Image 1 (tube, rainbow, N blue to C red):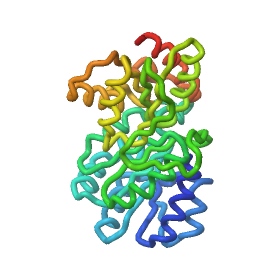
Image 2: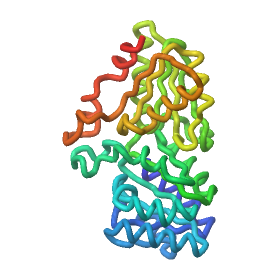
Image 3: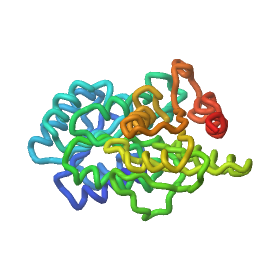
Image 4: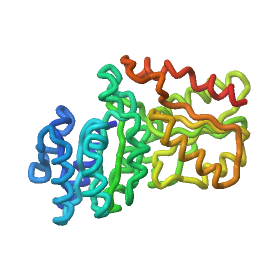
Length: 300
């Protein structure tokens, strides 16, 4: 996913010389293609995310659209005050491009697990927050976020994510995408965990249960209309996210349901404190949460 996104960014920046890419000494083997093609639009500021964010704000105030790049926790939590005060408060055209969201860097431990970022970024003023499920969603959302000319957060996986949509699939900023249609349960997913939702729908179908599957590549703005529709047409809703279940996508869906006065059977599938401090591959860590289909059956 990150390679396709950087290719899309390189193409966009080639046509828009006001675009600048900053990195905090990360992205080797990925960012070189941008740096070699557009050296005047690229800068490695070193391992200092607070400074990188301040530099991004300064460039934005000088007429540039800026992308900052690092592993999920570092351009968000490490420099949260600078993101909040320097970028969001001034409503500047800075897009934070984070790689390795969720448990992508699972074997490196909790310091590299990006499991609170979506909730925190979604609370900041003027921010748009996108969590694409596959390269198609990522490379399509990136230029839309840049065109907003406002603060944005684009959270990627690490590498090797399967394409779940055909190339060229329209992915507008905001609306959810329905990939499967069923009537027993609606699976609402954000990010690459969408692949597990699709696999769960297949497993449920083999036992006579049908599941609708929705991808929410954008969680701010959130497609509350689709959430309401899913609640009215399914007796149960299960949200899926590679993020803390406290304050993330599932919490925002629950709030939307409550405000709409809707009360389907509801549960959240995501990261809990039971995984705190555990180390392993991304797939192994997610497996510790139990299967999506078992969580779905528990609602039915």
